[in-house]
Structures are given as C-alpha cells and as structure tokens.
Amino acid sequence: MIERIGFVGLGMMGHGMAANILKNGYPLKALAHRNRTPLEDLLSHGATEAASMEELVSASDVVFFCVTGAPQVEDLVYRKNGVINLCRPGFILVDCTTSNPNLSRRISEDLGAAGAHFVDAPVTRAPKDAEAGRLNSLVGAENPIFERIEPLLACYSEHIVHFGPPGAGHSAKLINNFISCGYTALIAEGISLCFKAGVDARALYEVMSAGGADSGVLRKMVPPLLQGDLTGHKFTLNNACKDVGYFKEFADGFGFESYLAESLLTTYRAAVEAGLGEKMMASLVHLHGTIPPHK
Image (cartoon, rainbow, N blue to C red; front, side):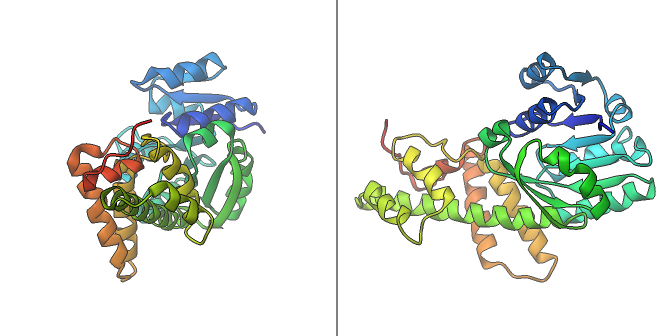
C-alpha cells in the first residue's frame, strides 16, 4: 500500500523533508500557510494543498508535524478541529517537532483510545541536510508502527534510530540538543574572550579542531564567524532557548538537578531578551559586546 501523506509545517526543515517524501513517489498534501513560497514549490512538483486540518486528515494515512514547539503541537491535536477529533483507526501522526516527551506520551494514549497511532520522530542536522535527505531521525514508536513508517523516514534521513516507545524519541532529542546548545554557548563565550583579550582566535581554532575540543558545532560555527558570518550554525537562538527550557523541565521531572541547564537557560534567555532571538547561534558573541571581524 502506498501511504497518503499529509504535512504541516513547511519551515527551514519541513520543506526539505516534505520535498523528499514527494520525490520518493508518495502522494503529499500540505496544509495551507501564510508563507506561500515553500508550499508553491511543493505544488509545482506535484503536491496538493489542503485548505483545512479536516481536509488534510481525511485525505491522509500518515500526517507529519514539523512545527515550532510543544504549544503548537498541542493546539493542532486538541483544538476543536484538531487531530484528536478527526482521526480514525489506523491513522498515524508523526511529530518531527522538538517537543515535550510528556506531551508526546499523552497524545499517544489519547490517539490510541481512538485506534490511531503516534510517533515522535524529531530530527537533527541542518536545513541543507533536510533538502539533501541526510537528516538523523530519533524515533519513539511501537514496533509495528515503526516498521510501517520507517520507509517514510528514510526519504529524508541518513540515520534512523528507534529509541523505544512513544516519547522516547523526544527524550533523546532533548538530551542531544542540550549538549549541542552547551557546545555553542561555550564556543561563543570562549571566542568572544579571544576578541577581548587579543588572543588569536584563528590560531586557537586550528588547535581546537585538531584535538579533543573538536566538534561538529565548532567546525560549522567558528570558521564563518571568523569571517564575520554569524549564520554558519543555522539554528535560531529562540529555538535554543525553547529546547534548553524543555530539557530542564524534562530533567526536573526525574528529580535530576542539572546545574548546567540553569546556566544555559540564563544565557539563551539573555540573548532573546537582547533582541537576538531570530538570529543564528553564533550571534551569542554579541552578548559579550564583541563584534567578529568583517569579511
């Protein structure tokens, strides 16, 4: 059976994911949105448009969400015309948003009561990897449902890891993003001090990238930064603040005292309050009054 796919959230990641599902021969219907550009691109390649959630769910076997965060997911599921009131037995909702594991488990239980299924499948890597079909998918799903949706995830994923039942994918993603956001904050603060203290940041990068301080975050963030480009690490500070907040809430739920989460949350909140929320991660250097060299 060829699954009929619905998609909600055609942002930086969602557009590439949806485009690759379409390229792999699956019928795809996307929910209308005020930003027409990514939608029009999909329509030009054979996708169709749904004017409402009712139309999308009724015409789809599997619906993907790739939206901003847990509040948006909760609204799309539980509002009057939300998924919970529109689904049918056998229907699958796949949430690729970085969201709250507790919400994921609640949605899974509520959909299950209607004979439908929930999968949390957040992704890592960058928008260019979404376009190239090289994302990493961290999946929470019951085994039979994972087997059913794995070919769909493979349309845009280079690596697919099944962490366990619903909620497990989001749990793993929060820990992943906490570590990544920690790297970013450390790098931004260290490089900022280089600028202030007169330390050769380019030479330090060469040392770090050749030793134990090397990381993917370092390599995609620092070389552009040293050329005055703060967009190398394509993840907004708003999203970082959101994800670290989710991580702290997740850790608190286990009575786990995370000393670093509180510090990171302070850092990212300060960036958002300074008006940097829509800027990319390297813009954290502006918190310390440092301006990287121009190209």
